[in-house]
Image (cartoon, rainbow, N blue to C red; front, top):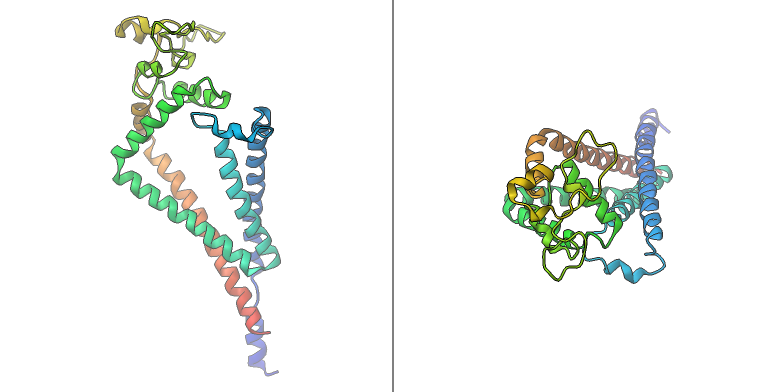
Length: 271
């Protein structure tokens, strides 16, 4: 073998740096995905969903556990493909990883553009989404906790205001409603009193029987759609930074995978 041939052969090798950086990058995703999946399945087991799978479709609102299952599942599959593909230098798994990650990136980019173009439609859908979940507030403990967290965090009540709670069978103001919570709102709508050490879960009882000005003393009267919009405007740089950071991580992963595939093909070509 000539000196030139030896130099050419030595140049065609798999970069250990790229290989193990990609492996480490993906093992974190794989473990996080497994953790999310585990949390989701545990939550479903606690609610008896795993013993009665038909109950998945019974909930009228959004089950937050779905978020853990879907995100965890995607992260687990991607992490597995990238991790094993890098470790075993398997081009099929590496191509699957980069194409799947590229597809997710494209869908995120498309969703972002559509959300910007069709802002009014997104706002209407958010309003519809919140109202559907208001109806199902007492149907699922995870959904209930999610709504309570949102109302407390954004200091809001309902999609557009406290009267949205008329959509819920326990809180509506109809005379046929026998519930003690009739004409009330959940405790998460209440304006917190710093002097109170114990949470008063009955603070919203009968509050909507009061006039609008009196209601403002006891509960938040702004809707969550408007408050969420205001929060986005106030934290636009932080939110944009998070999305840009996620996008850069995805591009970084795709580039590493494609680089490793090129190295593997170059080595195989010299065999």
